[in-house]
Amino acid sequence: MNKQQKVAKRRRSSMKEDPRNIQAVCPDFMAQKQEETQSKLAKHIENMKNASQAYVKTCFYDGDKTEHMWIKVEEINEEKSTITGRLDNEPVLVQNVFYGDMIQTTFDKIEEVIAV
Image (cartoon, rainbow, N blue to C red; front, side, top):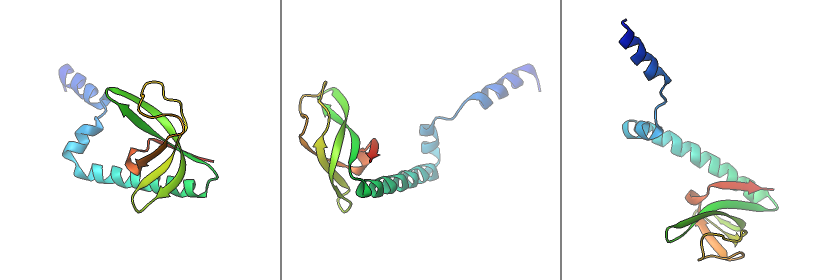
């Protein structure tokens, strides 16, 4: 193996594949990631049901402004895949929602979960 081949091999071995590339060429990768996400979500939902208080973080949009805020969960509807609750943050950037507003979001928009 010449010097150029060694450098190319070392470069290839140090590079990590971008998951977006893997998704494009390997449909099983997406199916596996979706299964993992569904499994984690099911655990989170069960934890929220059993908790005295639960919060979910989601992203809010107002034109070109975005803000990630917490919702205090009041209702979980597994049939419709929705969570309803009250906004538990004072918005700083977005002006179309306010602290205490009743908010409904879908399971796929949940970024984080806290259940206590």
